[in-house]
Image (cartoon, rainbow, N blue to C red; front, side, top):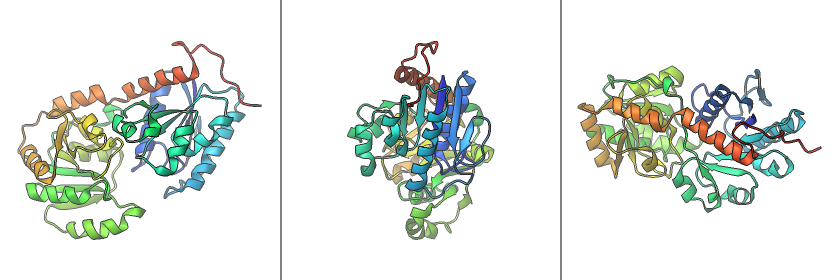
Length: 350
């Protein structure tokens, strides 16, 4: 198959540090190429073979107008390619506005929680929508026809750790919805050191100033900044637990499966996709409140958790190979291809 993959203009693929959507795009592209398919990636930053970028410098923070220009340019490139594509996989909503004018089947992954500004666009689109959790689809009536494909990542990037650092980990944005202040309070209540990886984004400054900064001076609490790549996997592998005390309906929560693949159990509030991701007692624990999370954390810090079993189960459920296979099945369906990819390439509109 020939696949056009339209990522965001905000973070390169693969992301050097932060970038959940872009990490999933990277895993998809790598897996599809390994399976023998031809992928043209539309992203930002440095270009390369089959990698095209309108913006050599990523646009951060996210802005809908550069996104619109990026999507328009990418689809123009698709139309101009005389070899044609079998399917377009978009990861920016702006691309959906152009779907009626492109004679190539399009699928689009919804990477965010429900946004009222986009509901009409999703409800009317001719593209096949992909939800990243059943809970995300349940909360958005306009996604009723979406196919659920959970995220997956390459297990080999996340070696098994023994939790030798004896600390609890938090990895993500320092934002109210991620609940970083809960993580600090939980760790202090359990008497377990906490290392915080990440930082506030531009929208989180008030929350950070009021709820996080005053807590950072507490004993045992260490903020280590942004981490990515090998440094990130080592950080997760060294933790006795990952704290995920979210205060919102998280559509997926990629860091959960990253931790599990290191053998590190996840302690999380049961919101959003969390009940779909955590297998109770095997890959983590669902917690009703801070007190229950602190109780579990104290027990995990004392040892006894089967980290190898956690990693084995995570490899079974959350591998990039599984994710790629599910996407390929959908691509064949929307492009009306048989298992051998037999069908003439769609022709661009003249």
